[in-house]
Image 1 (tube, rainbow, N blue to C red):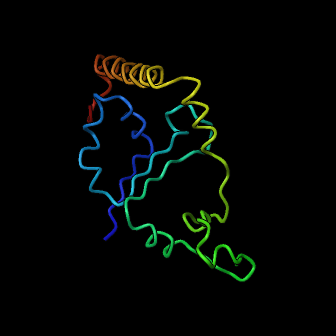
Image 2: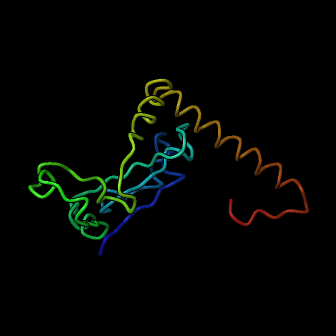
Length: 139
């Protein structure tokens, strides 16, 4: 069975050491995904996907190989066909957007950004908690 961790939104918070415990055990997963365009200042769309060992299982599940996409380099396994790692058949250079964010802001500024958003959420929770018309069901 394939064990996938989908940290699409909150995975970005794990750049702050204090929040990494939320993904304790992730090293046991076969794959891990986070979407940098959701909370890491990266333009739409940019997702990071880590695959532990069984890359071929993912490729077999998502691969399409019609005649018009066959080529000598792919058939000889000389290249990685990223078209087989997702349903769309192509890959944009999305990593450049993320690289630029990392270079421009740096780790400390991104951590500050995430911590600020979490503090804003806590402040909002406090405001909602003070209003008797609302109930906080999940802190």
